[in-house]
Image 1 (cartoon, rainbow over the protein chains, first blue to last red):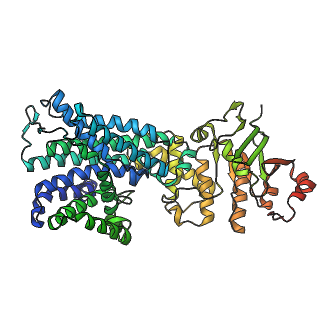
Image 2: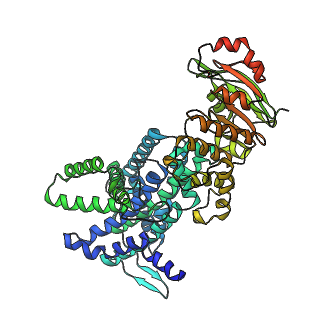
Image 3: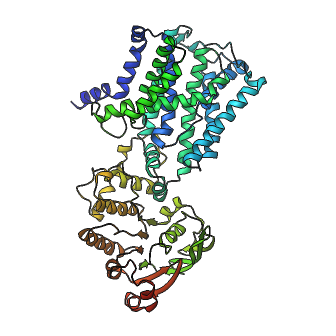
Length: 330
Length: 249
């Protein structure tokens, strides 16, 4: 019976449930007046929010300039497609991920010795610096106009698959596969010995150091991993919108991901960022269709949410023990 | 060659001379208590010795090798562990998990990204021994923040033991404890002192006089007296410095 129990536990595993929900999402969304493109945006931002929460919820590091890594992913994708190739279908995606990962590592190396407010201010400053470079470096980034006219490479796996991604539904499920991989990898990292060290760094960095952990490298690597997945999200965003703009890196987007993660309950739940990203983007979409002053309403909603339940949506659900999952995280 | 050799350590914070030229030698296996009023610089001394703060001048040698400028995270691998005056455990983790994190560091498994944390048997198997050594049986699954203050102090000690140290720096291990718990802690410290070299910062004179082989008295960043417990008890400078002080004799 052990085999059956294992299968059952896999089926009710929160990751499986989440994937099932996201698989059904584009079919359900039209019922509340949402377009498939909103679903795609939610999915891509979910990857970004998960990457962001590795830093915030698990390592205890607040980055106020994280949109820079979204933007770098987009530019990496675009630049590869424009200057190198769009024939190898995964090359632009990989370029977005690697470019962002490398820069995130360098930034992480510089900032990981700092603590608290200094750390966060540095991330903001560096984020804006990267934005500024993207905005001004006309020859490479297209400056204010950005890089446009991108294509979605056709996926070719000889003998197995030939997929045209121009259809929105096809593209959504393509992103879903990448989302599933990202979620799975991040889940495993968080529940590994390395992930456990990140969590004690968040609780008590001094004691972690006395135990023998060189916390500098753990924070640096955490930032890099976060950068890699943010780069994936950015590259997918470029693929989604067919362009890369400096706007993607603007600090307001950095603030958005902080909001999403906190409202959803990222501080106490792995899936919080997903709930937050869905809620945030759907709410913004709905409200902005009624009024041009949607920003005020979003702000009010954020304040109310944080006042009433600072642990976020999933944080509250966890407290009511509706979702009980063995082991840390969940 | 002394086991621990502190030479002329000094540290100032702004105009305040927190530690003002401390020299101290400790033999292997000794239990030396460091006493003195609040603000004497005792915790600062521990901070300096373990690399948490950089000294302005002076040096620290351990088994003949200089460790003065080594960072905190290198202490555990040298065999130097420390407990803390203010509670310094991982409050969200259980007793078991707290201890496990120490053993994980000791065995060098920090950089494993994809193995299941629960699956590392060799780490898991070492936890019960530590729990038994300090007497926290039955409390493995309790979260640190749900434990009593006394149990947390013991946990703090347990975490320090996970590095399999040869030197223990204990910073006021009995502060805030009730009488019965203090007795428990004294027994534990005595047991540990059979195998380890211990430096003990304490305010409770009952504890100090019952376990120490040697006592060092600090005041205003300096050592004002040093010697066997009976000598210190009779020392006039010490009595003068602390008439009406915080000592409970």
